[in-house]
Structures are given as C-alpha cells and as structure tokens.
Image (spheres, rainbow, N blue to C red):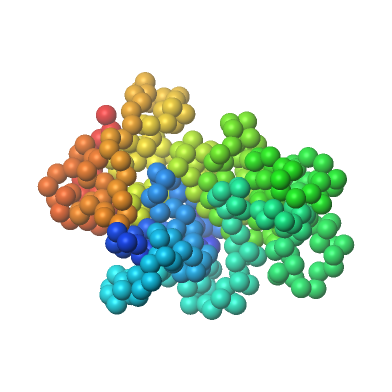
Length: 361
C-alpha cells in the first residue's frame, strides 16, 4: 500500500499553544495543521526553541497542565489571569486534534489517559529527567501495562518487560531488570524509554529528540531501533529533531517549523533535494550530510553555509513573515503581512509570499 492509500491516523487542525510570561504572550505553537498517516514517519524539523516540544504537548493533551510552570508564570501571581482576560489571544491550547475519528481535544482527562500511553506513546526529551531514580527500570518499563491493563499478572508483566528490553537490545536485561537508572548509560536509558513507549503496542509513537546528547555511535544504534519499530511493527512515528540528518534517515514526509509556525511541509525527498522555502533551503545547506546526499543524487558540489542572525524570541515575533529578518529574499510584503499557509502542489504546503520566484543558489 503506498502512502496516498493509507488513512490518516492523526489530524492536527489550526492548533495554537501560548504561554504567559513577564515579557508577553509566548506563541510557541501558532496555527499549525498537518496529518500523519498509518505506518508513516513524519519528521518535524526546526531550530531549538521553535515550538516543536510544545506541539508534542498539545497533541498529547498535556500542554494546559504544564504551561503555567513555564516562562516564570508560577512565580508571578495573577499573571495568567491577566492574559486570560483577552478572549482572542490567551494562554493555553486552542484548535483541534483528532486520533482516528476521536477528537482528543474534546475528551476529559480520564478518557484521554486511556489513549495516551496506550494508543499514543511518547519517547521524551532529556534522559536525565525522564526516568525516576527511585524505581527499577523493570518497574518503570512495565508501568504502561499496569495502568492500561489492571488485570495483568505480575509474572506476565515481567515477561513482557524483558521481551521489550531485549527487543531494543539492552545488554543483560534479565540480570539488570532490578537496577535503578543510575546504573545505565545515556544510550541504554534511551533504549529503556523506547521499550517503555512500545510495550503497550501503540499505533503512534512521538519521539522528541531521541538522539540528542548521545555520541555518534549510540545515535546510529538508536536510529536502527526506531527503524526496526517502524518497519516491523508498522507503527506511525512523529520524529522531532533539530538535526536534518536524523530526519533524512527516517521520514517519509517532513514538516519544517519556525517561530511556532509550519513554514513548509511535503515529501521528504523533495524537501531535502529541492526545498522551496528560504528557511528550508538554509537548513539543508547547513548540514554536511545533507549536502553530500544531494551531490550523490546528481546535484552540484555542495556549498555549506549557515543561516544569518538568530531565531526570534517567541514573546516578540517580528511582524509579517517571522523569518523575514534572516531571509535573503525578503521584500516589503514579507515585512508587513504573514504569508498564507497554502498547498502549492499536491501534498506540498508552504508559507511564503515568494514561492516560485526564488531558487536555491
């Protein structure tokens, strides 16, 4: 079955997620829409701080719970209430998220918990904080089973945990089952988190920077595990990363995010070889592995260059196109008017006033 014949598993429609802060409203996710099909890997690519992890929180129904603890809000009495008086732009999550035919954003916490962790699993970012140092890795890996299957017997749960720890190639899993996380390296901790995400047999796994803070050898091993998960279990994956090389290895389609907005979304091969948005062009020209990949596919000799300037503060995003202060192709309309997010070819979406007028050098 090709990708066009597969049914949408997850639909994100006009999602916004804002934090309150002393500096103003932080627009971490600003009018984002996309779909993930069954058995598909979507790569979400963008610089650190562009809103990728906040998008994960909105999809899983966790944003409103954690937003008040970000941006210094919890230490400023009345700050959230002040912003909430504005009906149009207020802290929290707005928009709709559908899993199959279920609107996740309309569910209460109890109903959502039945799906989150079972149908939709997360491989979190930040290995140092993701595992509880007080409990054994065996107990933590089996926790999703314990929550979603109250009748499971302890001996059956232990068997399943060892099965999945062996699946992700954790060395000596049977002997180390009872050890706490301090006895494991960063790469091993990542394997444990992957086993934890898979043990309840989810249909969608969201991996948030799964290879960050790992050396190159361990990154390769983790990517092999994720590829095995996708191919053998037919699991859909939303792979979040700032590393275009990681996204290139796995993704069927790629969404490029900047300042809380999707700037371009389309087929991975097209995005890496013929990017259309100036920001996507800049990203692809910043990674040696991507440049070499394009040259081997018949492109010209790569010219590596970065993107000038710095990403904007999400509490004070520039007017017009948020990328215009760093864009070499910006014209007057780019500084005044936010570009429409539109489908320019079948399955290819872009947010740029000058689409079709510019070509990568």
